Image (tube, rainbow, N blue to C red; front, side):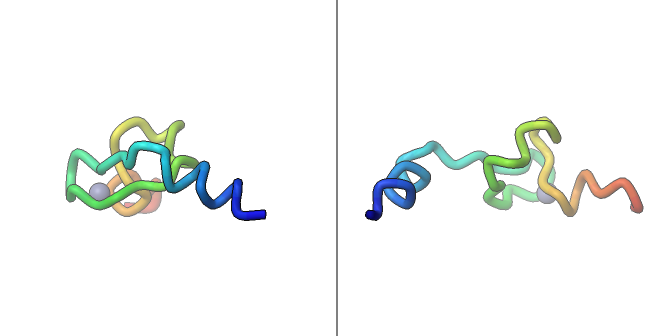
Amino acid sequence: MDNVVEFFRNLPKKKCQECGQDMLEKADCYGNLCDECDHPAR
Ligand SMILES: [Zn+2]
């Protein structure tokens, strides 16, 4: 049962506009910034 893994591997990778780091899909709500660049505590 590797279907889920394959599904995520086939998704286009999003990159942070600040640092160019690959972002996880959960970052959708953060726009184009990764957790590091969009950290609320920074
Ligand atoms: Zn970043």
